[in-house]
Length: 187
Image 1 (tube, rainbow, N blue to C red):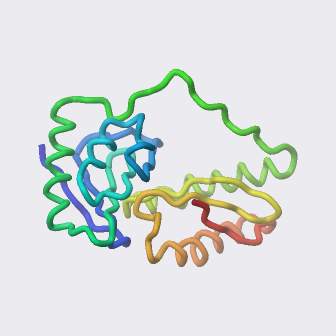
Image 2: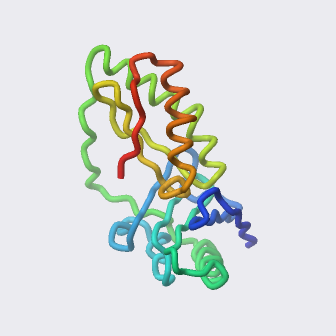
């Protein structure tokens, strides 16, 4: 198995391409600690490497964010070995649980139409582009003209994420949906 690596715009994040599906098309998971990765044996394995601060699982890639004081020269070899051993063993990336949490109720009326448009634009124009850089941007909420988005993977904590959010995504959404006044990131 050959695993490629790519740098991302976030110097603390490295993208790993194992050459096979990780979660499959349209699916992502973002973990910021070992305890929050209880449903992912792969993420838990990667958090065992000292210096790992976040793990993002995409359709066919993994991004790992390191602590500021950690060294990629040391981490990269351990992460490559861990990822290779994991996939060679054929273990499940995510263990599905039977008790799926309920989704929040969808907004009604005109607001629901705006939310549908926002989600469509994010899914078709934004997510594919940021996935190339090892990240993801997920719709969180919309209220009073403010769109709130979650930044995952390489996008989380990236020095250029504010510029991307304001100059790119906010301008694009305002162009298509005049009711939008601002776009904000949420933790």
